Image (cartoon, rainbow, N blue to C red; front, side, top):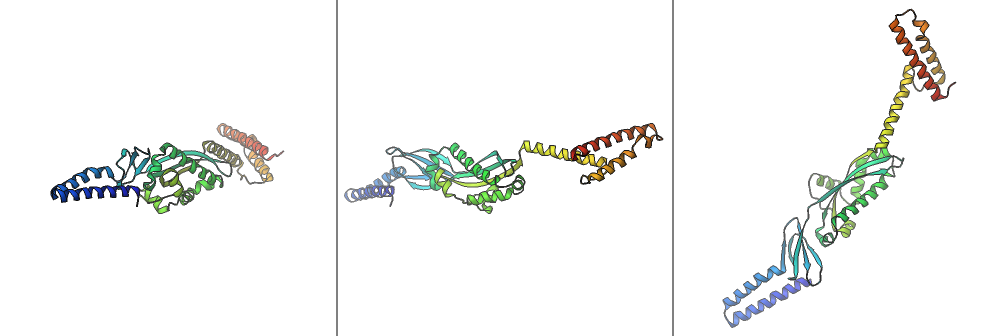
Length: 297
């Protein structure tokens, strides 16, 4: 039996004995009345009723110890003073950070999480600053994400974001059903012993909201795509495929140059001759670029 329970039991026994003596020696009504009066006043010093979704904090005036009480009825010392209350509702947060993938490409990841004070370890939570808890959670999750993302290519990470979510849930022992439930507003009973013992909390939700290529990489990718379109365009001018052989490139150039040569369009109108002249310039420029690209003489 706990010390508090022993003290309360002794107290109630003493009051009961005194009441019996009054009952036997003076009058039975006086004995019962005295017992009810004293018990009514004193029980408020021994018993604490904590409402739902709330934790109460007491301070022991003798030992200086801070104690947390979860929802329900509890026995306390008379010299414990209620000093504060703590909400047991879920706290949530999110952060964005850049991680380097296996192929050297930076990934911008946005991540959200949720946790609740542990009713069974409320005292640890009370004695820990919540800003420290959130910082440690971010450091922990960030380290895990860094290890995962650095193990795979950027494309794999982006297309397999759900698998990364599942892996994180598995690490913290949260089932997929529970994770979906909490995102819909449910309240799964999930606990993680390490997190719980360190900070007095239960982790409730993990979710990688987005995983994107970093802005510098997207700009480089766009430039590469634009360059690729330009390369395809110069081959289109010669009406050949970029995979054409050097011999086919030369043949295509001679055919197109001959088609728009001034001598071939001299009998046509002035407007068409201008168009042919402009087209021939494009053909010459395209051929020069292809020669430079392929180191042709």
